[in-house]
Image (tube, rainbow, N blue to C red; front, side, top):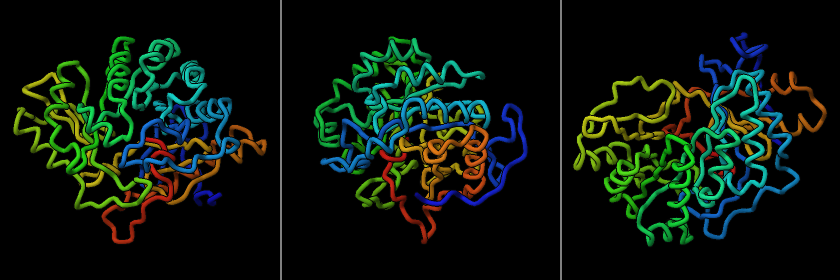
Length: 347
């Protein structure tokens, strides 16, 4: 396993005995992304090849009890206030409902969300809501069945749409839609996707494609930029800057036709928000990543399985976050894409 990031502890902060997850640049992580599996039932081309990937061996994955313990340490001892479960596809995790229920029982209770492709959510939305899930982010890149099949290598658009409807019916509000536009694939669909979101009262956010594909073929000059997305939307809608303070939210938002409806654009590459980042990440095999693009990881799974107490785990987590770099460095000539693809890191 990679060596833990070299660092020292941080000053105490409210709600986090011994200190929170503060880095050397003054940022504090209060948003935890927890990957529950690296597996997925789609094969979106910007994420993984059609044949799939070598999945993480089952013995290396955190058990449900280990997930619950590490989430509890983050919330109780490190000041985390938001927990988002991701994948891969988290709906494939058999113990998902129980994991959500355990997170909802924590004191203080974090806000709990889920990033999903919504396949199967039609069936699970009500149990997840009853367990304590607050809301969902659903990946939806197209409304055209043929384009969906071409992009995801699976004919599952109808199942995704049913899952989104099920989430809304269960009260998992607001339902947020995440869309990645790809040049020559779905880049003409931005206005149609916004009309769809407005018609159903969903919150739509476009995300620039990032260098996290398994094949490592991402090229900046082929990426549909935030500026291009906004230009396409402004050709058909009146967009005005959202007066509400953005804070640490990754999306820049605009009022659509005067509001109250909004649309967001996450310009991770061309409009980076690293200076306001408040995230810490836990992979399905128990590694802390202090940045989506981090080259190193800190092993909490091995620490926990060796008999370490919660205080020692919290201390190691603080050290990992203390060494966070000021930015992702995509524009730096020395930038190297992470060895793990997005499906193995967690969204």
